[in-house]
Length: 211
Image 1 (cartoon, rainbow, N blue to C red):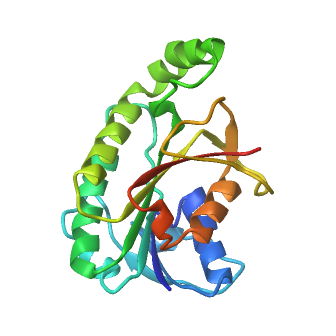
Image 2: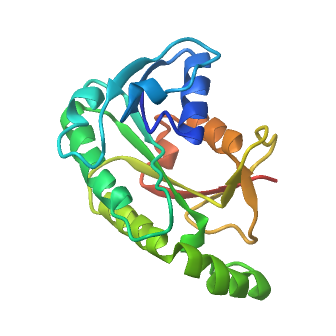
């Protein structure tokens, strides 16, 4: 398949790019600065410069792609619109370019209803306060996707860390996992690459964590 990875210079995006190349896909690494793209162990992707905050800049790089993966991020905890604005730009470019699947990352912290009481309380008192503004924009991002006609998949992840991929990650469709946890970026990247273009994931929230 022809895959575009928006945010390929980031740690998770870099892993998605590496694994997609290793799986034999044709990959376009979409980054704000191609010079910041780390070296890859498996093959060389095509590269394209684009910025999700620049209206229309994604149309060229996403034209003719089969699947688009967006691993957007932001620095700091201040108010942001990078996720919601990015979702608007991505859905418009996907629609114009003909891709059949858009995968975006979000946060498991948006829904803590199934956590045990103690963990839910800590999340509300600590995590929500620290990341309130980021979570607000991630919620807006998910609303943009839900209101579009795109075949999207949102992968909600807990706190991310480095390390190898889990052999048996926890996965829940549409409902939060019953406990808080962590996930390695490799676990998330592996799940994404294994489900590129998977109709069973279309227009669904996928909750993912290590075992």
